[in-house]
Length: 318
Image (cartoon, rainbow, N blue to C red; front, top):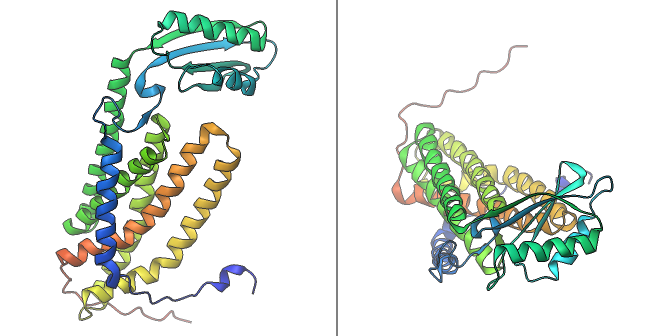
């Protein structure tokens, strides 16, 4: 029985297409709900999302406690007790250097907030050298937010062009609809669980787009092969056959990534927790959308089957 992977069936015969209508209705409702959660209330720059310092603006301090190393945990605890909104503490360069970012509380000036944070850091760490103080305004953060959304849109358009070039237009539309589905539902999860929306989140969503597209391409490539091989088989049966033939590869790849991200979520600390959760959800969602979003679009649209016959593979000469 070892390795345990042998327990999994080598060949499956699930009828995925039979449940495509129900899955499509569920996906549509989830997409509408996610859009509502992400956009409401319609207040700039992030609407219903919990914007981090990257998009809301804030203050950046570079500190040094040379020759001693900075106690990052003590800094996080001390600043966490203050009303500074989203506080980020990261190692920077040498062990004795760190970067602290925080938001200015309402009703206070940036200068007053900076002095309060400096006093807290000196009480917590002792002698501290403040190498740099920089205030990021909301205008710059708004431009950063627009650039992040532009990067997401550009990635989706490039994916459409690639699939169109690699396969056919309907394949490209199916892949892009699946990508929009994954991105919108990911935004919904971020809003639902009040996860921080920052540049790290943008990076996680871009990674999800790449993973989802990779899984979709694998299914589409097998579908194209089977369309040429089984020219008289109904399209729905060909889609089911193609998904079943790639299912074990999809499950094993996704499960491996989820296990790695699970360890990162448990032991990576608060800084990487949100990133890991978003990635785990995105990988599961990317697998689902390849089966129940991208492939059903091919079923609705139809596909042109090539006129060429499949050439049999000649046996190897001994």
